[in-house]
Length: 342
Image (tube, rainbow, N blue to C red; front, side, top):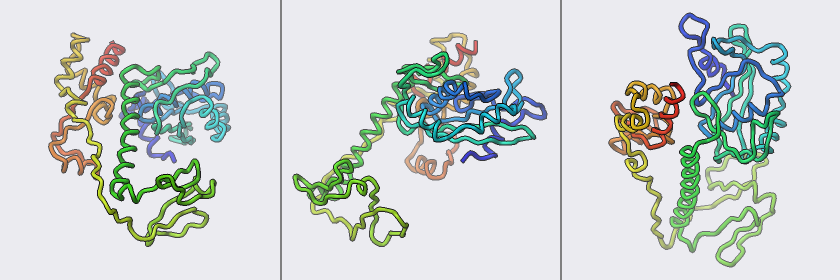
């Protein structure tokens, strides 16, 4: 659920003035009014946010100067007509993967703002499957991505990152599965095939399940069961004790310095190879405004020890003086932004 305080921060005013503090960026887009006829344009932004890190689409913000104007009565009426079930259905028809989103209407300082929150896609890239929109703003086969404050077709560097991450996730799933088989011992392992609705071991069928039940199953260890009416489950009694241990080599994350070979000052040098006039301060500004330090597509923290990294993952507290290191995609991104600004 979208929280009021989230929206209030996104439309916060600058000082005592009327203009907004925040500008449009990778995770934020403003529209003056909402119009059902423009759904294809909004869907394009939905896909772009989903392919990046998610974001907000806020209606009721005027451009030049960027102020809280609020939505008109007609705009509010159309916004409230949005049927989440129908919109989700349209999105599934148009794009290759599920796009998760929420919608809410907020009143802030006596004006109303219509807000869509789009979540990062679990399965990327989200690809357009058909042409859509009055001017075909969505085209079959295109992939949209959020760059700075705009939506556009994805560039090679970002698409390559998405593909590499998808391959890595798939490999990790296999490694996790093999690790579990290794812990139990292959002679103690069986496969639950939810498509065929049966449990198999070697060439033998151990248990045939009702097809509907197979898709709903949850496994619950004895002593950890909390009754919930209607929940389908198999109870596991006791622990699986392996007879033989099979050594499984777990996936080791690629060496950071190989994945992110550039120190901060080296990033400046690489940028200046493309844009000799670029200043160090301009590079730092692009990094800060686009939050590149917290985006693994472009950079990573180079922790001095595993203890530091574990603490950061657990508590979200970044130790002082931890440097960020960057990849070539970060350089390409910074160059594009600086060229656009100039």
